Picture 1: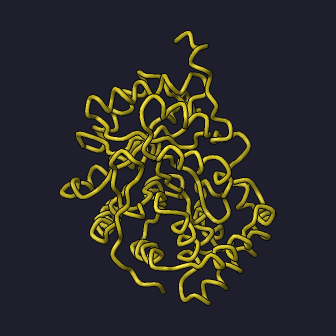
Picture 2: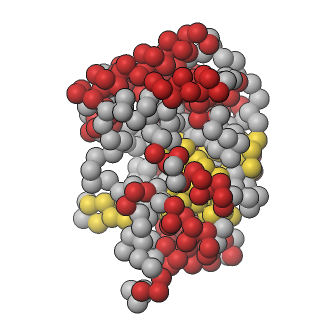
Picture 3: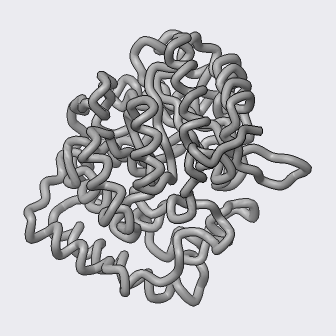
Length: 344
């Protein structure tokens, strides 16, 4: 297994935010991937991450909802100055139905509530989690800019935003990071999103860089999922698709064996090799997995090995969409032009 070494620091975006080259996605500690994990264990994991050099922590108000931010608030006691804290707003609930909002009063209320739950004075990186397509992105960004000016947030990010939305948002106030799904089996952002971010000097934060656990254990990942694990309903994890997708994992596993690392380290190393402006945030609830993820930083890949890996998980080899048909993603995140906006 690749060794755990010192975690280097990188500049995320061009506004001054510096983070560990790998972050920690905290969602699975509290939501979506089965029941919440024991609080004391998760606080110990977060402290271990920070002590190991993984200081970029990622959460959202929708994780729980709210309980993941409360967890991080407790975990940050005594280490707040040592970490870079990212959270998100934009996904709410009305009468049990998910709604996406970016109107200024909602933006401000979400920020104030997150500050209280996290028990901090300022959020380092505040993302719009999903884009509200009912109003111009400039309207949402105007309020976020005010929150920066008031010292409540330091940097602004977007998640699941298309290239034109990123450009329009960036024109209002510099965007520091764009968070997108990016892994060996999810590469559609490479055509338009990645070049746009690089042109504008925006950092890229890949979520699910291990394919929601697929590149850790292949088809076996679905065998022990809890009833309320959202992966159970994702197209790629359905039996008719997983049968073929499992072959991708087998080939990645064979290459990992040759290189003396684990398949998850190999898949994560591939993401790290995308560039110095890329900071993946693999999530885990186990210290041994965290250590293994850190080990991915020391796995070196040649251009030939990168191409070989990519050939295993080519677009036509991957079966099933990453989300169901009705889920909002960057592909449907265009917002109305500001000139046409009449206000609420």
